[in-house]
Length: 206
Length: 306
Image (cartoon, rainbow over all chains, first blue to last red; front, top):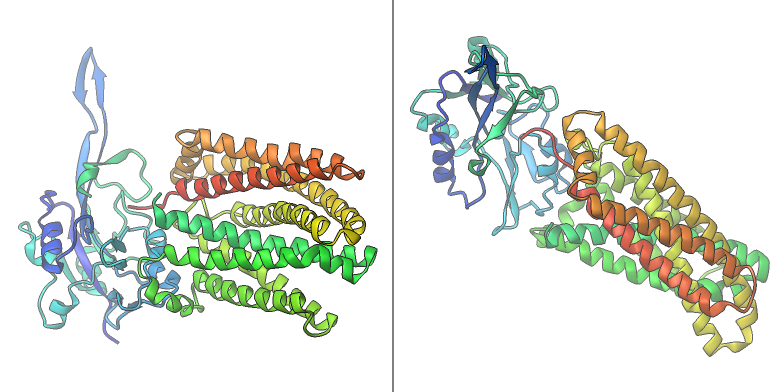
């Protein structure tokens, strides 16, 4: 059996430029409102008063580029009543639009917001790992587009060997829910899933 | 909330009302036949049975408006292995077919009573399974406000409450019709209708009691069960507070206060006219309340994650 493919995201290199998000939209010709890859800006911390002066204290911000996690336990696939979602040998989770009934149940189940509704087509869409490119030995569009080399992809076990197994930076959900095929390299302020100290910023860009 | 979400509200409310109506009708028919014989019992309930078939058909049509791609609708039953939604659609379709067959047999008196009885029991069990599968759809680990026991409890309460009051209204309408068309049987029918309405009143008062107990417990549970669940509780009493208050007040008014009036006016003969107004208004008020409740169910659930 082929090895589960996964994305690698280096939070410590990411500047939040969203080139990956745009490359993704461009490559798959996504309609307005549909964003298979999204870059979350998570920030928190406060200014504190010291000796009558306000000084920056624990203020932090970082970016989390995220798409479909092609989970090892994909809830979307489990709940889809039309059996329109499948997982390939190499772990890529795909929606078959010809089978989709457009009930949007998968979007209620997925904690990563990966399945998104295409209003015009009336069906769900989702990151497909650029499987057409991957099958030809090329790289996904987002990986190719990153000017900071913060994105990579490969077999999950190899990525884990190289970069560790951290898969749950805030604001993403607890990875134990769906076992996402992803590895994140945190920076020194990255919080873990479930953190309540920060909040998402620039929601209109998501 | 857009048209597709409202289609879901209409579908779930109408299927649950149909299931509840069938159950209530079965119980009422059983006691009516023991009290006044099969013929009078059939006269009381047969027309209401047809009303259930009509509501079920409307529910099926409404469900299609929820889909972005209704042409693929038949595919909705292809993942029975892991999707409760597949079970809901399968059970919904089978329930509707069995109820329609039963209604036709009952209407035309096809087959023996024993056979029709068996089919009615099958329909009732299918209906219960349907509402159960419907509640399981929402019990997703990623939707903390739905993933609680309150979902099946409130779904079954809605089922029985709407079923009771819908049948109350149907009996009153049936009686008015019988009085006009078959005056000979009006006395026996009046007696049966009043008896049924007394029990419907008692059921409604009890069921609204369940709702008024479950909601505070539910809100308390949400408030203390993680930030996403807490935000559901907050929006229920905050931005949606007016709708939530109206939903509870209308349920109390329609099922509780009108229930008491309904019971009082059904104890003695001669108050059929006021009984009619009461049964109709109780049904309409509770229907509005339950639709608001279902609206809140969808509007105040938040998914975990991003």
